[in-house]
Image 1 (spheres, rainbow over the protein chains, first blue to last red):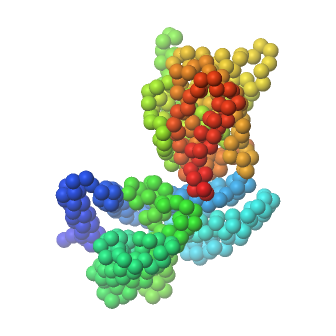
Image 2 (image 1 turned 180 degrees about the vertical axis):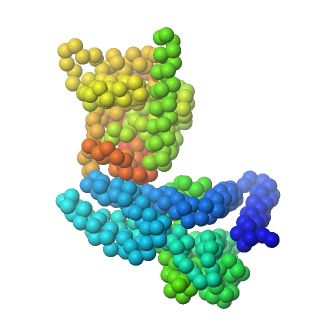
Image 3 (image 1 turned 120 degrees about the vertical axis):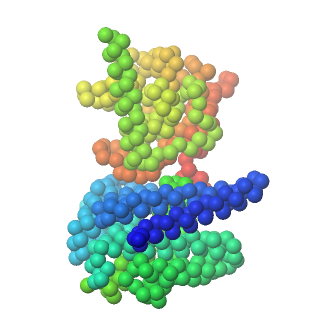
Length: 310
Length: 221
């Protein structure tokens, strides 16, 4: 008898194999592969790697997932801070974000110290970071600088750390299966991104916010969210939810994910760049892949915690 | 005996070079952008903006390994020669070319030191500003004349402008630990001295060629 985890792995491998096959057939049929096709193949190849890395981390449970998300937070924070305007006097605050805030936040996840985990960044760091900046005495663009620093740790560390924190919830009747909750969240939210991309490419006509992102269309949003909600319902067996609960939770997570992508696009547009970085071939940077996850993870975490956790 | 020592020396340098390149990549995710020139085995003088001690490590880690091993950075003797530890790092681990910024009696002429390295067939990394630029409001200081003298003496060696992005934020002057930020090194089109070009005109032209590579410049334009 296969475990749910193995079933899931087989399912994902089957889907990726199908995607790679379709991309290969399309590439062969096109005489000169278009930029979109080359990008599609790159994206699918990157998906293979990302699924393998996540799967491996999940096999190692809480420790594996915490280590993986420390790295993801590191890469995301690096991309975020690179894009914001900093001054030389911000040196200690910036260094502290990487050397203190990331390790402490994930240590709090690992030791399951919930009380401090939820307030360490929004209370302690948000007050002490500007204090440190003020002590340095450089008031040039003060508010812009501290706001950008706080938003950077909020997104790249605080919100992100809610994914591994799912493993710390104790849900009656669901003991030892929390890794599947992480898989559920990642698959529905990332699946929603992919489905929005596909629906947008096939039917997209009317942009949701044309000045922010011409590629995010109402057709892509409705088609992507609708099918991702159905995907969530179909995966209810991974979760403590029944099918309609799974559909509702998936819908809310994917809607938040859409907002995350939209906000990330607005930031990139403001800074005049197309991608956050270049870590993941075909996708851009880590934040280009994680923007939807950071918006959905805290909401998903608190819904599960409020309604299901003991 | 000397043979063994030479070989050991070489592998230590090779190892340090690779370790530093790996470290630079881990912290800054550095990647080269070849915009106007390509990696090549030609002998070259790479000239770059200078804001941090990490600059030449970042630049050399963008070169193919073989090229990295024969590319030597020119550094100030008054800083890198000051303590035994700095001398060890500069001479034995990184094989930089130390030159005196203030010409004084008995000191080796900086031009001679650089030319003798070129004579051996090695490539150079130089920072024509002559010092680290710590002025946040000024992108690039005026160039000193070393670049012109080198171009005049060795017209056969390619002069490649290299814009190092963000390094002043990663490792500001006087700081020891690097802040992880993404860096890129933009390698531009080689520039050469044209006939009868004056020193001042050439330095101005090469400075502008370097400034034009700054991606930030394009972004705000």
